[in-house]
Length: 113
Length: 114
Image (cartoon, rainbow over all chains, first blue to last red; front, side):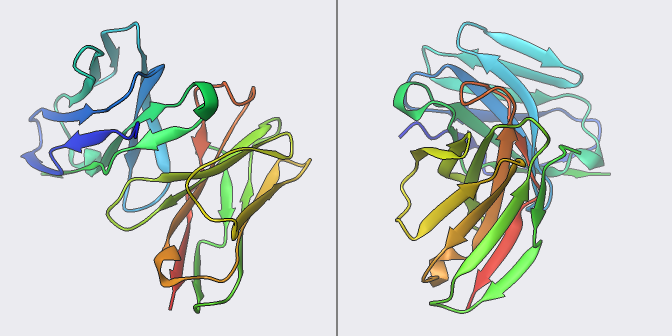
């Protein structure tokens, strides 16, 4: 399966701290994407990193990708209570599975004020 | 806001019934995908439609079917509902075809099967 797996399953931090979530996957990828989901609602696309990229930044988000280890990490700096949500990594299928996203189970992040 | 809407927001059905879920995409979004998300799990790919034809299906039985219409709306139909079909159903649409990497998710329909 191409499905990503996030670690940890749950993370609880104070406002102002950094939050790091990890993702591992099993097969080669074209890109890896991170999504955010508030309270079981729709998914919001956060950032996409391609297989030939090693690091990408977007505001307070920093994503790394290590294709040799088949892993990625999402760092949220200076977290806020509003960052409380579930975060999912998703690998993007190619070839016969073109266009499909394969999600992990997610990390539930709680940021306390 | 992603511009993708879904209806209804919540739905309760009983086992054996049939259900139709609807998704409305942005104008020009010619590809729509449907995902099932069970409680505590990540979304799982059901199928995707491109220009009104199914183009790829995940590991879901034939009682899950779909339609895509020329006005960029789509439907997910599930026959003979089972208890395990209880989940959040998400649609996602994109502009530019199947190879487009970025897609936009709707808020989902939460289905409960009793």
